[in-house]
Image: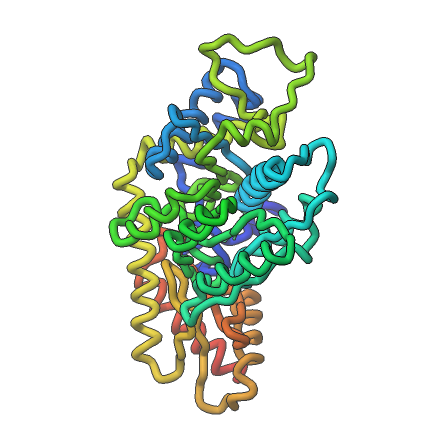
Length: 415
Ligand SMILES: Cc1ncc(COP(=O)(O)O)c(C=O)c1O
């Protein structure tokens, strides 16, 4: 272990790991993972501690959205945002086909032509979900974005109208509460209006930005829009600092979702008693399910929502510090910012304009190889950038200052 495993980590525990959206794990979550593994329950359903803990965790998140169990809201923990998108869209598929008089579970997807709407900024897991559900990527309509990388609602409206006129069935809109690339938040309220008007399912991918939208005062408008979604995906292993893996899908009307997933063969269990909590396995794909809830539950118990507010706001403040430092420098250019993401380019003297893309790529490789800091290369509006995402409360402004110098040194030597 000491020779071959622990010296070679992924690196997300480091305060200078700024790539992708991989937070450092909170120690309480790490300890809880060990306890959960030792208890080793299957959280399909039943009446044992792990089931109640997951129900409580889900209830806490539903409350943040203003959704209530009594009115049918439900949810379950997943491996992450990809699984949440798949489950959200599977429920959307069930509803759209049922409206057309088709039992999609029995008859499959061939009978109608459907459309799923998302921007090019949406996470690739949306495409994977559409493929996995047998809808085919031809069913995806790419909605243009504005200059802030947010969904263009006029275009969305027009596309839905023209698809309806052409005989297609609009199945779902997938909006983002914090895109992976630039942290952009789509205009969720407007999109919810359009979906309500057209009777289209709205899934909001809040895998990255969901916690910020749900908790921070200055994002209240986005929160109101989020609360109007039909399903929402949120990752606890991103901006809630839980160890991998744990995300969740929340459904505004879980009763309809049960029709999508419930399949209870006789060998599995007898009729539940009326006071028994509903079975998670009837709301998703997994039968045997791990005790993911414990690490989320203990962290929320420990930090409280106010503790989380402070940590998330701190990450954003550190990202703002990075943006301010880059802004005042002559050898850097900011390309996009949002939530705790900063996309930028190093442009030192001596690197020609046409070589700037290659320069950022070389820099990213060199940083990764040297191992003193890690930023992922990405592209914004066709330009290669370095992308920093701060989801680690251990990252200080001092780390950021140091990272800038590390980039300068690496950049000057590769220029
Ligand atoms: C915005 C967004 N959506 C979805 C995902 C996929 O989530 P996961 O990797 O937890 O499956 C990510 C992962 O980075 C993401 O940032």
